[in-house]
Length: 466
Image (cartoon, rainbow, N blue to C red; front, side, top):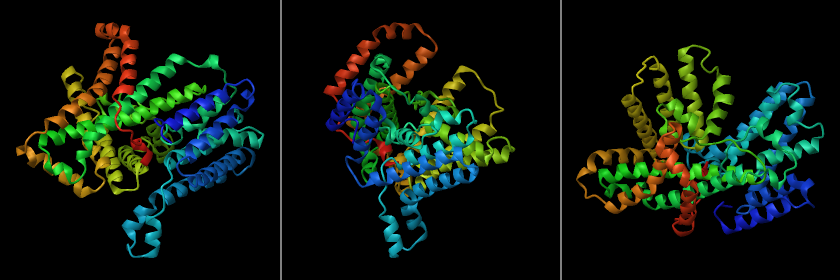
């Protein structure tokens, strides 16, 4: 079920009515669970079975970590279960294509295993639940794990299936979310916060991302072969803005919807395209994933505590895992390795201190260009096509310029750049920012008007495939 669909708004309104009704206030968690199950099972009921199994096992194991002596063994079993679950449903086709003969019956079976929507997110949250309970201090564990198993089961399922974040995050951490599970009231809602996040989120998704996809589809093979160098470069910038608007839009909607029910989700994007280093970029892009990888992969591997060579290897391995988390394809592994390599090189060159303004601007552009070119591996998952695209950038300079594609991409990308520019003005407290902030409700009014009048053809969120 899409956040942009009519049936979702019906579900949302009905959920809000029951949720805040005085007659059902003591059953708010159950109401959210029912709505979340309907939300997830609406398009494919059978995939709900896997989600329920995952929730049951993670709830059961996280409960007994607190009350049995062999805590490490239980936690390890739980983590292995989540990893194997994700590996089987997400990476079986990749393993089959890479290591097995395509005529092999087993290969045929593995290739055709369906990918349950949101599995990358809810398995990571299962891991978070287990590790946070295992590593938590004794006085903190009761805040996550209730002594009553059925109460813990109910809270655990809400943590995993809460519909605003269920399909594409933000990835939650148990020690943050469980503390928020309590009775909610309408007076606790920050309506301005909800309004701003929902309007900006729907604007990014429906007006920016959904319109940009009508022009960036030319990146696909073989369409890009007929486009000039300028158009090919413009489309890459357009896709970079599209993937940001699409995913940041989803995250803003999720945060706004969660706030409607009294829950605070982690900020997932913090103006990533003004990053002047790759480390800074990963502190701003998909923050919930990068913090998960840092806490549960990079630091357990040793982080930066075991010498420079080991640090570089840990960075590479963490980013390759992060790349493969996005999809079962070697293109995603290469994408992750590329970012890992850039992070390692950046760390190696950290002794160079050049802080003058021009150099900072140069670094900002370099990070954006590198990130933008790397997104090509998300759009063209076939290496041959991606390499052909880069080759065409060099050779297609003689082809006529398609002004229509360039102009439309420029128009729909402009709000993304303005959004980041506005943040820089705010950060530096410039007079231009102080003047613009006086008209912020007017700006939000324009965005709301454009949502109703200039939305593109509704498409699924890009990160649903992960």
